[in-house]
Image (cartoon, rainbow, N blue to C red; front, top):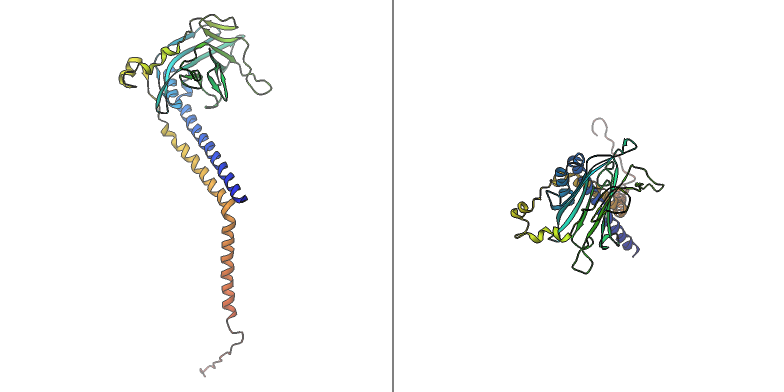
Length: 322
């Protein structure tokens, strides 16, 4: 009974490890694609957002944002765009919004901060965004361009018109965006190794001017989620007419070109699992079989020797053959 319990736990461990290894292999594939096509295009919306279509599995994003804010002068510069998007979940086209921050350049005390880290926070009027097991009224990401993807993440916040994002639980209504906040860090870390963000924010945008401290503010960020559920306005689904009418970008790259990274990782992992399984469950019995066979062979030889006569007359033949 104990053996079967141990075998069961072994299978469970292998199953969990397989999922983890496959996920890591897929991350390697995404990282390779990101480095080849997106890393150097961070401040080029056309190229970068086509890459976002690819690695995030978006069906489309609009070619033009429905909201923009740009600061191109002074010590605190950046660009912000909010784009309608869509993904397919369970064969259903789900609308959403994407917040994208790029071209960030921050100068303090006469020196430009190299690779500033940014934290984008989208505040909602209801707690609909699920993080872990908790529903929050904020959706937050931290982007660090010095880290490799996917650990750097991307300078985008994704909000879908579905459960766990914008849809109010159990009701047919959706949370509204009240404001968007951008904080920044020069890379300083606290004792726990977390980034320390400046108390004065880089930007706060909402329907009114916020009283919180920020270098840049806007009072024209008014997003009504229902205005951007574009799929409800498609007459015949996501066809060429809808793409042209709403200015949708459906182009994406080809991740299958990087499938060899997954195959290579899984083949190596499979070889390790086979070897480990053999050592744990079969090697002992194989060695017993080999040993028994060897003993049986040696015993047969001894039996043949023992059947030969101990004393045997020797025929002596003289030189003449007599």
